[in-house]
Image (cartoon, rainbow, N blue to C red; front, top):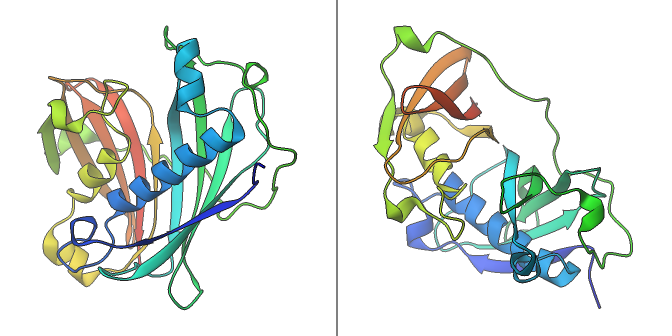
Length: 244
């Protein structure tokens, strides 16, 4: 029997928390990635099915609202449910419920399926066992992109991609970008500010040997635009980070 919504309970472990012993954004995306993969398998369009047809999932957008960040040692329940796909986009919501049964984090994501040539596969070609979809989104936000003059700035963070950044699709795992984005902020900045939301738009894939440079700009009080550029030319991600 397939379920339209699933939940998994976990404990926040030390390596999933930061220097303040709070859940890292990258670890949060890791929880989301795992439960989404498990649910897709249950619904009949998981990786084990798609791989046989030369297809794979990619995340195109994630937006998360943070009421509070769970801490190391805390038990959390992660929930997810898909929304009805359109021609090529699959949308999925997430919630993180804390030990008191209160919503700590809510999120909304967009995914697509690519074939071996990197082309988007129409949703009509994908098998799905879901008998109905849940319309309610856990969170919603308008697309966030603020262009700014990167030529006048030094990168806030840079990295040369090596194998440890890879996932099974031989490119940088989507959760890694959360670390890169928040590496644009200092320890003191993160200690002094409470994270309220963040969103990431995935534009291009990155591979071994690529040099990624990340630029940030405060576009409103407590609101930052971040852009990641590959080899000084191509934008790979755009992001928004909002602090209290």
